[in-house]
Length: 375
Image 1 (spheres, one colour):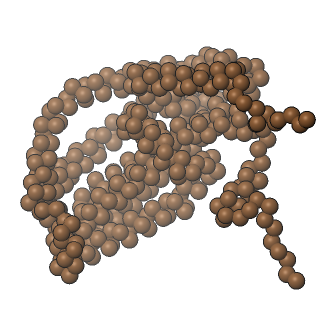
Image 2 (image 1 turned 45 degrees about the horizontal axis):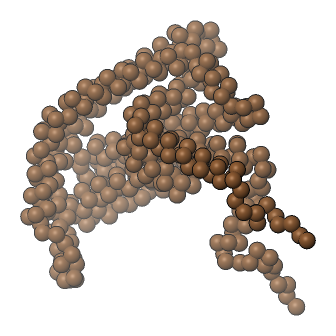
Image 3 (image 1 turned 120 degrees about the horizontal axis):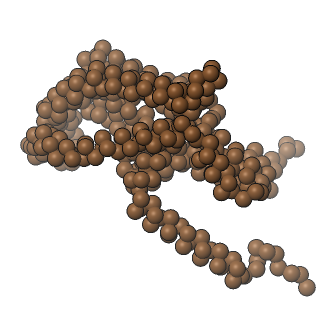
C-alpha cells in the first residue's frame, strides 16, 4: 500500500496552530504599525539616512578624524547645503508656484478651448466635458484659500520642526555609535541564521546608498533638463517644473506621471505647439533617464520589478502617507533581500530555471513541450 506524500496529507494540528499563530502575528503587527506609524516612520527615515551617511563617516575615520567629529562635520555640511538651498530656492519657487495657482482658472479656460475646438468636429466629445464656469469657479475658490490653508497649517509646521529636531538628535546618536545597535540586531537572530542576518544588513546598506545616490543624481539631471527645456520653449513656471521633477524622483513611477501631467496641462493651455514641444522634451528626458542614467548610476544593485515598486508605493502611502510612498523602494528592497537570504538561497533556487519555467507559462506552452524537428 502506497503512503501519501506530505503534500497529500491533511492539515495536522501542529500545522494549523502555526497558521493561526502566523495570522495572529500579522494582525498584531498591523495594529502596532497603525498605532505607532509616526514613530516607526521617524525611525525608518533616521536609519535610512544613517545607512547612507555612515560610509562617509567611516571614510573620515580612516583618515584619523575621530568619529564624533566626523559625524559633526557631515551633519554640519548637510545643514549648510540644505539651508543654502532653502534661502536661494524657496522664495522664487514659492513666488512662481503662487503665480501658477492664481493662473489656474485661465489655464483651464485655455485647455478647454483646445478641447472645444476639437469638439466642434466631434460633438460627442463636447458632451463629456464639464462646464467651464463650474470648473473655473472651483479652481479659483481653491486658489483663493491658499492663504487660509497656510495659516491653519502653522501648528503643523511647528510640529514638523519639532519632529525634524528629534530626528536630527536621533541621527546623531545612531551615527556616533552604531555598533551596539548592529550587535543587538545580530544577537536577535538565532545562531543558524546569523550569517543571513549579517548579509541582509550589509546588502540593505549597499542598496540604500546606491538608491539615494541614484535618486539624487537622477533628480538633479532630470530637474535641470526639464526646467531648462521648459524655459527654452516658454512654458512657465519653468523653475517650479524643475523642482517638481527633482522631487518626483522620490516617488517611484507615480512622481514622473504627476510631473508630466502638470507640465503638459500647462503647455496645452498655451497652444498645440507648446504642448508638442513640451511632450517631446518630457519623453526625451525620461527616456534618457530610464535607459542611460538608471543603469549607469544604480547598476545591478537595485533589481526591483516596476509592479513590486508600485505595490509598495501604494501600500506605504496608505499606511504612512507621502513620506511612506518615498520609502517604498527601501521597503521593497528590504522584503526582497529577506526573502532571498532566508528562503531562496537556503533552497538553492535556480533563477535561470525559474525564468525558463516562467517563459513557458507566459507563452502558454506545455511544460514538457519539445520543438518538433523537421523531417
